Amino acid sequence: MANYGIAQTDEIVIVIGPSGSGKSTFIDYAMGGKGEGIGHGVKSCTTEVTVRKTILGTPPRSIAFVDTPGVDSTSAIDLVALANIADFLTQVHNKGFRTGRILYLHRISDNRIVILPTKVLELLASMCNNFSMPSAVVVATMWSLVKEDIANQRLDELKDMMKSTSFPVPGVTKFQDNMESVCEIVLSQLPSPTKTAGTRGRPRAVVEEEEVIIVMGPTGSGKSTFIDYAIGGNGEGIGHGIKSRTNEITTYKKTLGDTPRTITFVDTPGVDDASDFGNLGTVAEYCGNIRKSGHRLSKILYLHRISDNRVTTSPVETLKLFAHLLGNHDIPAVIIVTTMWSIVQVHIGQDRLIELKSIFGERMKRTECDFVEFKDTSDSAREISLMSPSHSPSVTDNPRITLGNQLEDLIKERKETTRQLKELTGRRETLTLKAQVDKLDKLIAQLIEKVLRLGLNLPEAAKKWLSKSQPLNGQDSTRGLD
Image 1 (cartoon, rainbow, N blue to C red):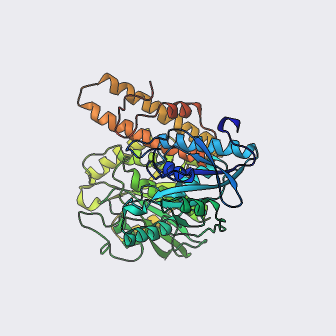
Image 2: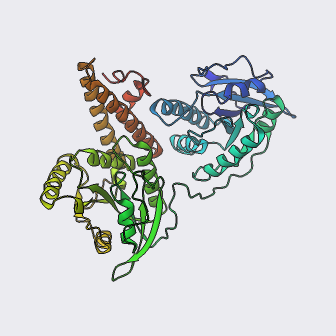
Image 3: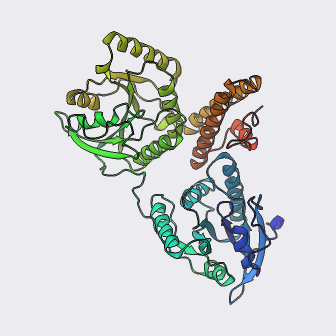
């Protein structure tokens, strides 16, 4: 590690965290400063990995502090920053240097947690293939900016939320903005991390022999009504108002069929189009955790209102996005359940169903779907729940091929959309195209994250996209891919 001035006798401490979390300030205190002179402005001053060395403790220990760029999300830009940190850790490991620990700094002054420390650490570990990942400690900073009771409440909430991820951390420690606090954090013996199984976004009330049915669809498509009929209700009492009452994942268990089958129905927040990344990502994460836990993900029931007087490509794009988020090798069989037949004339409903099937046939290339009508009865709900799909999901033995193809397809689509956007500069259509580019950027970034989590190599097109992906988050969408 000659380029960084690190010796074999140095103990390496990696300091990571969001921009403005106090990484450089922490290191300045460690170097004997007053937490000043490194960077306190709005703009981050650390744009690459840098190393500063000092002597701490009795007996003396030579510590090499590694200051890193801010990681504020898992967007493409921040994935590049994480990749640089992972590359540094891999070099350290390969050369046999002593990596003491990672300190992840978290602002306790934030009134909303944008990204969990453990989520970033989990992703970083996957980029390092885990073998070069040292133990990690979460350090809460900025205590002087908030009242003590509020800070302690946020600290408790942070600890609870961190239990929902699989990355083990020994706890959260406080940084008190002084040299003594630095020494206590850096020189203390790390307790053994313990994994605690959380429930947020994870399978709840599901046992191994049960099958799980995911019920998805737009707000107001009848998801909760369907489940209420299936579990023995009359389609009422779950939610029929204008505002959706399902704002998080909830589960309902019922034994159905002549040969009893225990089914867990998963009611999901409404996903109204493919730009609804928040809810769709939540459902994808839940499905992934179901699979990881060894449970049987039986099928997806995607509910579509036949009463809509215009059939759009929205359900197709939503399911394609969902398949991308899971990876097509993970997606279960999909059944399109058309609802609201009682409020349209039969011939109109049938015409719309033909059009819907045509759209799916043209655009769903990798995942075929069954179509079934929901009759607003318990018998109909149970029959649909127990049916065996006639189409199996598309399965690829090699996830690298599947995800790589998906990435290349999306990047090609992004390139074509960018070309159209440049041609239509100044016209009204550019607003729609810019939104499409932003949506594609988000999706590409999420797929890249998934590839890296699996420890796979990125396709060349994805590497090129990363190198040109700086203009995200509301900046000029016509840049990036020429």
